[in-house]
Length: 85
Image (cartoon, rainbow, N blue to C red):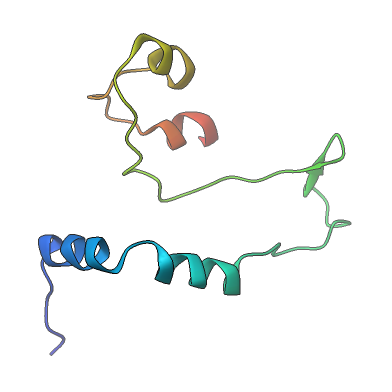
């Protein structure tokens, strides 16, 4: 049986570790998954990207952010979902 770790414990661990471990992981694994000549990879000469799993993105509930991201801080859809989906 795998032990279950609480969300609070994970938050505290991430806070104590800081950004260094995720930055190191990003530097190892980040990179294109396909070649430039793969159909649909570029649009107007630019590589197309989408981000998933950003439901925890939080931005201040300001008029400017609502205009740019849509909705409000209490909206059921995240800013990333609004832009990508």
